[in-house]
Image (tube, rainbow, N blue to C red; front, side):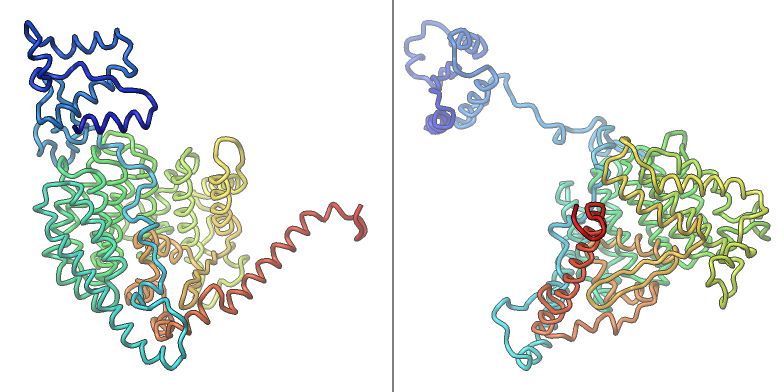
Length: 571
């Protein structure tokens, strides 16, 4: 009966009549069993005869319908068991195959794409109104008095909801070490990452994570980083959870750095792991030392590891360009925690060779600027800009340095040093990349590279300080040095959709960027009506900004079309 239903649906879909299958067994065909003089012929021979008779479907489709028929009758097809997919097959050497420095299967190395991320922007990028007022009803606007009366209760309900979601995610993460299915473990780690970045807000969220870090977070991530057992996506998610946890915990947490140091270093050095897993591991290690660590010995050891990984070869194998770019980003982040002289100085006492770390790796950065990978070139240019800025700051007092001419000819210049020729070549290469064109890159990549290297050129060639303004709900953040810009970009990549929430509630981030928490959280005291009147897209401020942009766009278009007019009159 089930086969007849399936056949009728197939006939309705294709418009072709499906003949009766000739591969039924004798147990399913009483008529053949009664009339047959000998044993029932094998299914393969009957299938070939059906093909010769001009059946409207081929051998593969016949095997498919045969399998459905046998399955519905609870009879195993003789010698025609379906082949398991590659992901369901047991790896060679058992489930625990592969050592600490290896992945159980070679096919796992290139599973993750270059743009893979643990957080889906569609599902996790939420509006701040939803994060801080989840229980706001979307009904008609009420009076300001009624809104103020209900504001306290809504804020309390929203905080309770975030705390409940964080507790649920931690409860699921506690089962990761005992969960046998890799897909489930990955799902729990993704939920934990979202909870840590978006729901662990304020002191209450920090205390909750701190109470569970030794019992839940670290064991779950350790289980997710098991080589040969965990898939690359699971390993990547575990590293991202460790990275986000460091931001929430805050400073003076050397115990946390020591607990995850060996685990992450082993993941970075394992050349058999996926490149994106190693990228996430080195970023998590750098973030933990940047935020939580106070030991400069561990920081210098991580800097040494970054310099070794960003080389063309590491442990006898070529390094993926994306891993090299991530190593340079981590090197730049950790370099913001040391003095300028230890980055761009020379003839320094107490250092092997007397030169700063940035000066030593200048030849490597020059090679990276000539690499074909855009991400690696951008990371190298950012490091050169940081080193050059540190070199200029060495010769400027606190009350000086406002003029670019003074910055160029003071003690911090490269003129007269052994690195002068190399820096001239680097400046020339950066200027070329700021205007590079051709068919080798896509239009989007060329536009991004030009905009990025124009900022680098303003510092490296023109000795100008960078300027970047971050606008978000609650105010603006002005950054005027490459140190701050590098830290901001690293934090953005780490927290993703939870960056603004953490910036408004995390005291550690506010101390890093010099922000005032009371000013950032002034919108938290607004009622729903006030938020809609002041901060929505239909507010007066948004309308004025839209008018200003339209006016600028119109002026820009008129300037482009100026050649169509002559003496103010149309030709």
